[in-house]
Length: 526
Image (cartoon, rainbow, N blue to C red; front, side):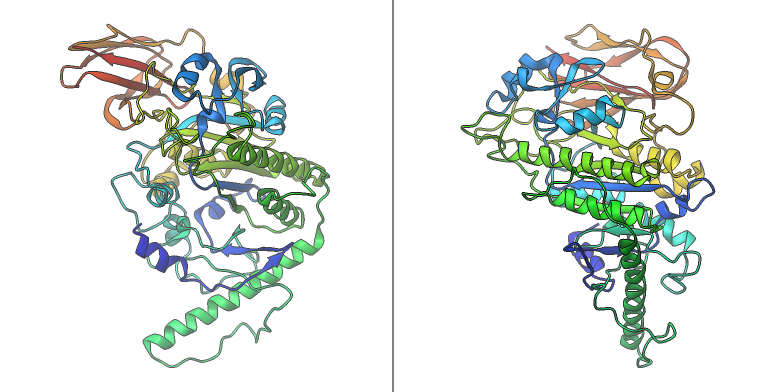
């Protein structure tokens, strides 16, 4: 979506402030996520999206201890001291930033799934464009005028906003705590988002009608704006009623300092417990564009701006999860963090990191299959300033998994929303299948020889009886070619790869079969 179009479309709805606990609330129009949730068996499920604005540094968040010496060589001025990295149950290869003690406890108790190296092919590196890609689920070389939720909305709710809210849809389907309407909800003709007035200063309604307007194009637009304003006020009434029904129970929310994420999640917990039927909540936190002063110059690399941000996430998510449990609604809520991109492997001279490619995501809640999905990022021996972490998991696979395994969407509907087929990952407990059943890695193998290669190499891998995709990336994380995308039976397989067409240098190959994501390193020398 072009920047000019985005600005125009995000102000299409009525913008009126609603304040609960000092935060403005913004209600979205009906979305495909909500339609999914209206299916039998999924009506009470809630998704909470946490957007980390700026591009989070994944290598200092989820730390590859199995490559610590290479990590120090690449970013010794910001790398976390090895003895201070938080260990995780079940692995010696991966740890968390020392500021995330609460998140570590949630992980060790099975409440967190860590998805490694999530991104998209051919990273753009622009904050605005990359965010647009995440919200529209477009390819990097395409501009979508509709959001990944709005595309489904156009087919299921023709004529919106006429007829909403209704007796069967009395509450706002999605709520964002913040100012702008997300491009994810852009339909083919208009933005379907709206804002809500302050609940202490509602307008009176007159039998669900609006004041007459001139029979002109401008008059029709005025009628629409008045209708949106009326709906906004009606939704505000239901939100305030839900907020008045519940109080937060957890004592873990910060009482001092500035943790806006915790404040936002506190509101979400209150509204969910108050009986609001809203299914999708969006909250956000900024400050992750850490080009400089990412760590403290004097207090140790475990302190500084990034440490403060990660600690706030950890504290906020833990308090939120505790609150949901006490309020008796933790079975209903799934949470997800995402950022528009990661940071470069090599740090800069300003104690920071520049725009990169892939980064980890956290999925949290009682119904996750806790654990680490995907291998640690591969750190090259002598990284250049432009080297990146190659994508291990396409973020659209994460979306598709949430839609299918949390909300119960059909495969046909997935194609409509996601514009393509993406592997379903096992991080959600969709039934009785356990994590160990889904991700057992017995005798799996991925390698190539010769390595270094000259004019050819042979890629060796283990099939598990599923569709398998293998992609080749350059050192900057850009996708170069698809090496395989086919069904491979259980057992060992070999691919011949012509490397004569590639210049000398470092490359990565990634295998993805939906259950496993593994990455290997290829060096070409001549």
